[in-house]
Image (cartoon, helix red, strand yellow):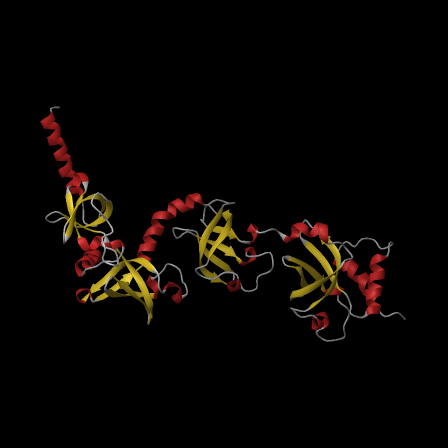
Length: 387
């Protein structure tokens, strides 16, 4: 091909590229000249574009670019040449730009000034806008957490010539989530450690957003080695936490998460520090029909079977003298490391009876108990008054 033909081909390709440029498209170019009102930007095959000089100034009115600098900007108009805007990602400066942003769906940057009735007052350049509570985030959070923050918003209503603006941050976040969802799901596998945000908290656990709107369930039983009675005391909506993926159900896409797995299991040290016959201080955590659960240390609970408590003539039975939260001395009766079970018995406060129990547990002719029932029978015998 001859040189004139090559020039023609280049020009033809450049014209095609220029036609492909659409309003709302983000392009990159080099500043070639700066005038009193506009600057000229070389955008390659797309031709030359203009951008308002005010777009290139900082908050103090000083130019923050020079000839030769490359900038990214958004195409605001293709009529009569390309008109660019850079302020839409930092806060639109004029009514024309705000209206263009509304029609094209382009984001504008705004600062959350304060909480007002029903939502937030947002400052976008010199304009005030309103963002409803439901549109500030995809998660339910403390309203005050957003005050003073600078976010990207989409204008969802443009009324009264721009004097009445309603904006949404949630719309942009949901778009980002949809774009990231597939990528996030590919990265989720059993055993993976991930960082996410708490989306909501329930009595049974918390839902954690792992990114892209993909959520997993952190069940209350996986929140800590100690029993959790109030999930809201462990996590709150909006908290950023690190969790471990326990299971992924390929059919239902349900994801199970764990928090306690990222810390040492307190049961790992039980074999070295607990022995049958030891007396330890414990705290009763809850009662059941068959006995009381006793916390011996955070994450390690024992069971004091109902039959191990001293007989009582009170109508309520053994539970009348035992209440959640009480502390006392408990003797270790049995240890099953594999099943993570420890059997305990409350040591009577009466010193004479306590001594009888101790003598009984130290007798060499007593065969090891097979369960709580047989051992409890012998223990009750030791506790009966001597005739």
